[in-house]
Length: 446
Image 1 (cartoon, rainbow, N blue to C red):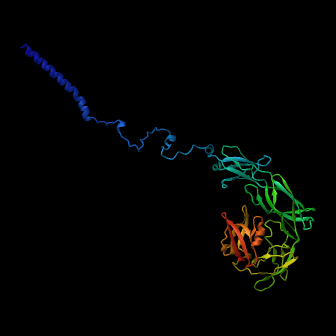
Image 2 (image 1 turned 180 degrees about the vertical axis):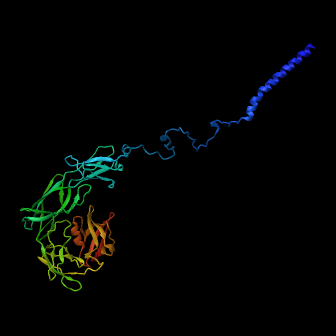
Image 3 (image 1 turned 45 degrees about the horizontal axis):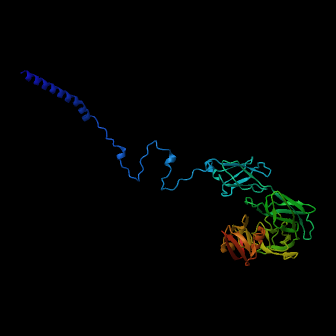
């Protein structure tokens, strides 16, 4: 009996313990059932990434320059910035100095590789080129000095461009017997600079010279090759031989011979009525491209007659005849052939409404002097040059087989003009190619 009561007590104790254990498990079970479950987090190593896809970079990835480095198969990255490029955010600055080392204003500074990159020196000789000029070879030009020695300039450097000293020409003007001509006009007919050719044209500097010995001196000349022209009353323009001028030196013993001119006579009449034209102007045309022409124009008298003294005694020349009521006419191909006089009668057409204002006989091309030589500036539509295919920019290298390299612009003009129907052969250079064209001169109106 006693054992029975003891066994019952043990069973009740175990049952109480079991119920207590179950009661303790109920709260965690309810939490597990009713609270949201977090998403399972898988280890990163188990997410397989294809070999050709780059893994995503976190926001705090390595610096941008590391990201910018291309992978091995790609082209190599650009080289690190050069010292000049690093400073290219700022302009290229410097100063232009004269031969004595003093700043000079007004000089033109440009890059020889890219002439469009240019600037002008200010009142203190300072210049400022754009950042793109960093590392270029710069040249400064300021007549009458010679061009500065080409110098490499940088944005980070202390850039100074030194102009070269000017030179001079000294000489005299005489007649064919060697006697001095004591009063005349003198000018620079043509100039080819030494160096870059920044200022290839300085002609037109006509000046009056009066000296018992016929002497002259021209100072402040940039180094290069010059041709001078002189003219006096009754003596047509005559030229010197080519003269080389060096920096800081005077080229001496230059001599220009002025021959006595011939006389051109004639009559100017109306082309329709044949009536004389009074007070028509007659003058030399294109005898020189400078201002050294001392032969004054003349007017026709009551009979339409004129007498022009001082025309060239030999070689082709032209005269311009004009009147306010008539079309201007240029009469080319005149030649006194060594005689004391020659004659040219001229007919002028009345000037109609909207009509042409000038007529001449030639090839119908306008010329200019450029660093490359005598160049065609334009061709007149329908003229011989246009019909033959000559074009703007062609450089004239021969006229009737004679080299044109040493011919002044005015001589080239006279040789291309001539009576209608006559032939002329012109050799030109175009883009490095030589081309010879034979044309018949014709009347060209414009």
